Image 1 (cartoon, rainbow, N blue to C red):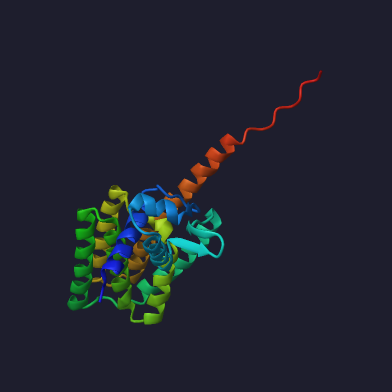
Image 2: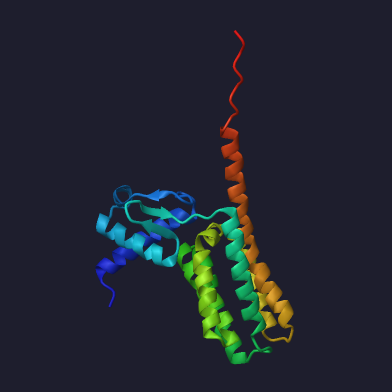
Length: 233
């Protein structure tokens, strides 16, 4: 049973999550419980519990004596994570036996309808939850629950990378269309086309994050002006 305290913690977690998605808290930034509690009008206990919720999701890291931080990745880590996620995604897609039954396609369409409703409501946490539910349901058609579990873990690890696109509604419109194309391919027999589309679907979020890192590095270099040579006296 969900208690009022649980609801409060979830509400604070969602508020922090939206701050991260909209860039108010950047990758690697310290999340100070006292400041968040004051800003959100919540107790530090609720904030601490909310940060634990976000840690389980993969959007926050916590270390002893260092506190909580927004999870951040280097460019090389992003590439390595997506290399793994793309391999798992391709394998799961190739293992789906085509064509899929009308009943299974209807189940995936229902998950897509939930995702589209979340987009239309502009609820960022719901967009995240329903998008993940769609992918888990879709790749569950491969028939290997261990592969799907590993894929879900990879999705969770890349959540911060993907989060930057959740507030980009132009990208969400493209993602919605790509989901429909993925569903359409379930009724055919071209497994390679399906796997390729599923992998391509992942790449815009990765590139968006890499572009952001590149911009930040360029700005940092601009701030680090070279030392001026001493003038001869």
